[in-house]
Length: 214
Image 1 (tube, one colour):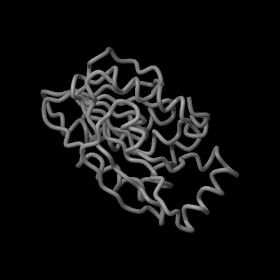
Image 2 (tube, helix red, strand yellow):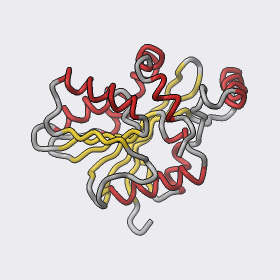
Image 3 (cartoon, one colour):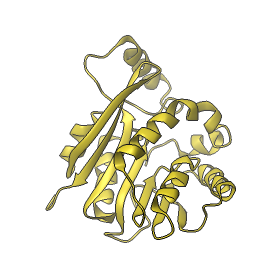
Image 4 (cartoon, one colour):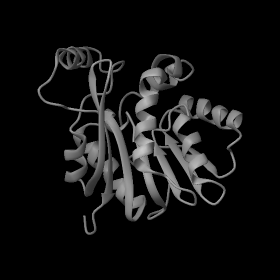
């Protein structure tokens, strides 16, 4: 598991003030690409402060189900409060749990999303997270990932961010990853992508489907 859940516990009350203004538009972009629809059973891994879970709940509607999981108990508390304020607690399940051992049965979900979460894991753990995604997704299920993108060539901001990440990995914990390549390598077929920049850093949103027999 990533070594940062205690940091997120400490930051949970202030996280939206620190990060939602920059991360929020890309989270929304990822959800638009994923195209969650009424009646679907949906999961957000790394639900954080609950913004995405509220959106998933509204997309799933009265006939669907939106679930969220986060390793940080502090983030779960903030997300639960947001769900209460948004009056979307019906048809929503929020779990305090580990992405490497998702607390859900196999073939449960139509679609999964995660924003600025996959890149918190090292290569071996990332493979484990994506294996868990394949396990809980139904056949031909979708996964949507928003992450800092390992674009080439690196610009000065990417190089600066990389230096800060290496010096202070607990506080600057995300790192750029080749999103589409990783998904393709771990049993998914990318079907849609969009890119942008956050404070000069490349960000990519990718939606992929499970590959039969992967």
